[in-house]
Length: 107
Image (cartoon, rainbow, N blue to C red; front, side, top):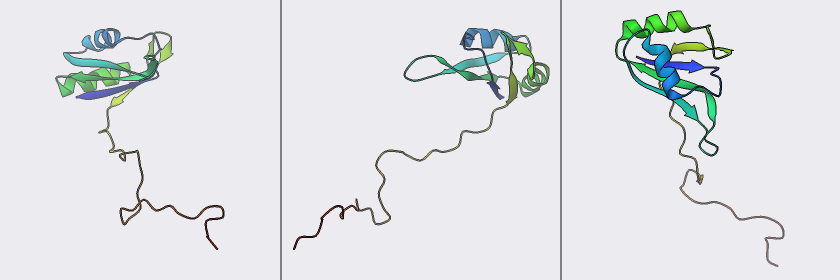
């Protein structure tokens, strides 16, 4: 079971998260999400537990608990939504479009 934890203190590490959830069963992975550029925690993370029943028990026991000075929220993680590819946008005909602009006509 994949579990989402939000409102984490910025000092919480992957190991801290794993230790917290291991009290409720086997943790297969624990990850605090960090900012790509600064490496600083973004205040949320994910824990993967081997057994769904143990995972649900951990959610029930830990949701709303004070952990490292903050009240954490613990839920079943939702599947990640697909994000658009970003980068260069093209119009429907796969053209770059463009044209126009100030004084674009030649007389």
